Length: 104
Image (cartoon, rainbow, N blue to C red; front, side, top):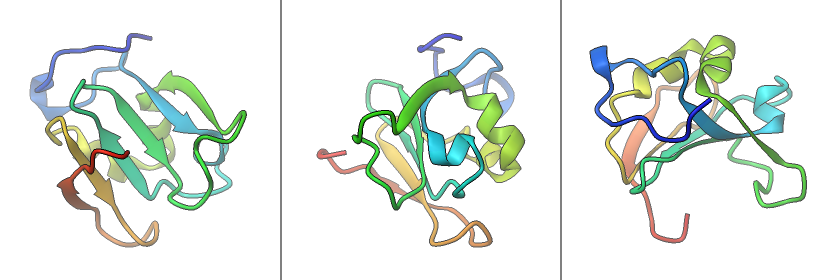
C-alpha cells in the first residue's frame, strides 16, 4: 500500500496500490460510504457521513480497492481532483462532487 500516487490516475481508475484512510464502519460493511474526500495533498479518505472519524479506532489505513470492491460506485470518483469531496445522502443516491472545505 502506498500513500501517494500521482494524480490524475492512468485510465481514470484508482491504482491497486493506492491507500486511503477508511472508516471501519464502511470497511466492515456496517454503514455505506457516504463521503469520499480527496485532499489538496492528494490523500484519500472514505467515511460513513454519520459517525465521528476522529473517535479512537474509527479509521484504518487500507487499500482503496477494498472499499471499491464493497461499493463499485466509488470507482467513478477516481477522477475527482485534489481539494474536492463527494457526498450522497444514501447508498442508492448519486454522488455529488464539490469543493472540500478547509476544516475537513
